[in-house]
Image (cartoon, rainbow, N blue to C red; front, side):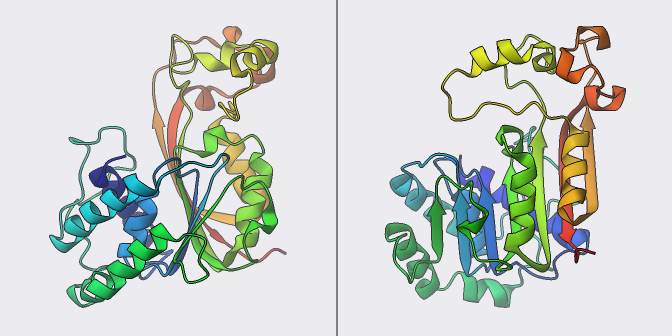
Amino acid sequence: MTARYCYAVWLRHLVMASKNGLLAASPKIVGELGPGDSIGIGLAALLSGADMYYGMDVVRHAFLRKNIKLLDELVDLFARRESIPDEREFVNIRPYLDSYKFPYQLLTDELLASHLSEGRIKQIRNSLENCNSTMSMIRYAAPWYSANLLEKESVDMIYSQAVLEHVDDLRGAYQAMYLWLKPKGCISHTIDFKCHELADSWNGHWAFSDFTWRLMRGRRAYLLNREPHSTHIKLVREAGFEIVCDEKIEMPSKLRHEQLAAPFKNMSAEDMVISDAFVQAVKRPLQ
């Protein structure tokens, strides 16, 4: 990931959360699912005012050197109040925004003077170099399967970028997010339902039998869970969230309904053409 990509992704999540009434300012405690070998989006969150970042992954990655370089580049982008890179630069980053101007309404000059102070940047750099320190602003955990990984009701916002389509236990993941979030905390997820080049057509992965799919996955720690949009929406609601944003992207399907494998024979016509979605939801009290 480049610094501009991480900057573009984080500010999209932040701006949309503000637009949808989920946040009045930058969240103080953030969690990211599946950062991979870069926590650049998390660093952007810290530079926006977060005091703690939790990165949670399936497998552990070595990322220190790359992220120190990303930090320096992100500091420069925020210091210059760079406009949010739009779809002309990153065509696949969703959602599209109404405006790509720097969000001064959320990140005022006064706030940025504090967030980008020499002492605070040094603190973030030290946290990168000493993630295991009790003083670190960064916590990185892998694997993250256990709901006991984070303290209950300790996080303001949990986000992911094209990650949840890889999670095997989706129900458990959404339930864990609900437990981790503070009351009125929020989730913000971009989900990619495409085949990730594993089939000839973008939704061709729904034509493979379970047996064939197991052979394709082999011993990989993760691949795709192949769950469609409606499954995510159902599980988000069942976990206890109220959905405030569900922006869907549709693509024409070359796959005919009769070509669907047995597990997907009951898939709706709508699910068959939803290629991506941006979902934001707020934690509501369980009845």
